[in-house]
Image 1 (cartoon, rainbow, N blue to C red):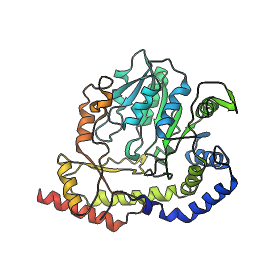
Image 2 (tube, helix red, strand yellow):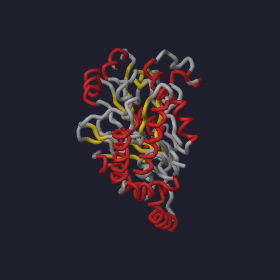
Image 3 (cartoon, rainbow, N blue to C red):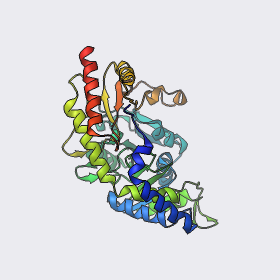
Image 4 (spheres, rainbow, N blue to C red):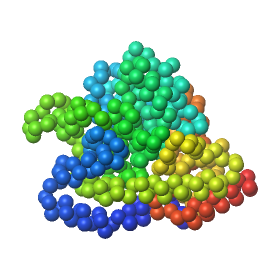
Length: 364
């Protein structure tokens, strides 16, 4: 069986260091906002090329806290891609704002900058781009729009740890880069975790307060905050894995090249661009008979996933909120298939998957 993901096998190379780090934290007796979080924040900021990192509880709350830190009027509109994971949209709703979907470029599956301005109204206050599947968005035109129209910019980097746009790491273009460290991410911890990166010291300090009950000094609460703190133990695990993140990304890129060179012409493969450094959190292909292919592969011992099976505008939870037609998004969601591409997969695993997919194509 070639699994889509196996977190025990993924993390096996780090077990010894995890045990050592856990023992150190356990014996320190400090479990909330201690040295591990502070050191991870410094190390991740340095890795990204950002001035500040603020660790928070998870990826959804990183997006929510970014929006809350702007102190925008309730009911403000936020531009979002129409084909993102629902967490992006939930953060807007939970911040008391209105998500406005913009269709993606079908070639990259990222938000299409040429469609953004048509969706801007006097109520639009921010743009939230998503570097989907580990591919950086086309940031230059997005930045130009935000500067000209006076809009805040949040980068949802939940799937793009280490990805680069024209040599610069994602998470450093907008007012905030918002990160998830969910266990399956290229930089994943052993539970939930998240962070924000920013160049702005005022925004950084506001998020530090917001994540900790609105407090800078214990028991003195300056703003209405919440409890959204990156766990000390998870920060320790992340510090271990961060040292290997570039290695993880390079391995996944090498597996992606096998897919790219071996798969037949009947599939839409991820677009490539010499000015982008893709990190392939997901390697997705597209095919009109996606479901049939998925079932056929499973019967032959290959597990796949779908990221994501339902377009946000068709989710029951968003009925009456964001249910306008989004045909490009709906087509992507109906045809996309995520293939195995974990840090523990071998080239031989990927070659076997390619052989099976090509066999299916030849027979169908």
